[in-house]
Amino acid sequence: MEIPVVRNILEANSATAEELRKLFAEKNILVLNLISSPGAGKTTLLERTLTELGSRFGMAVIEGDLMTDNDARRVAATGAQAVQINTEGGCHLDAAMVSNALVSLDLDNIDILFVENVGNLVCPVEFDVGEDAKIALLSVTEGDDKPEKYPLLFELSKAMVLNKIDLLPYVDFDCDRAEAFARSLNKGLASFRVSCRTPEGLEAWYGWIENALAEKRGAAA
Image (tube, rainbow, N blue to C red; front, side):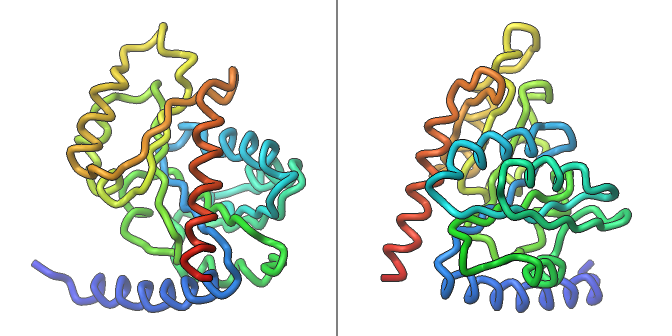
């Protein structure tokens, strides 16, 4: 049964997200929405990415969390612009929250904006925040059946990052199985096996980001 209030909330969010998408297009800003379970390594991946690409691109992060500004302080330490959104119990960021956070950022000096969503594989997927791409982050310390259990995230994402592969010798996780099911949902899904410790696989991830930015700017030219 369709619940009108839920439909109205999603429709209002979509309208705000489209306004954001137009703004980001005008500013030539690539926006990536990172979605994962808690503890999968979003912030550590961002720290690595911001550090490695920071000399070439202006980057910023909108941090979503239930409480604290711990993650925002970590990413700000890389030199990137950062703003924290505390949802105080809310399970996702929405377009209005992102819109409000933009007043704290210098958009004219941003090439790439990362939205680190609240740790959750369900609610954040349904709320468009004006992003160019959703990124599904999955740690090998989780089950390799996550794409089967939470298919919408992998169906809508443009890339999947399998993180913490340095732990593969110690866990029962089949990367091939996880990728096969995710790609059965989304044939165009890019996949990266990475370790933020070693840092195996990260160059391919960085290359994908650079290509996505070039494609966006090429389409706007």
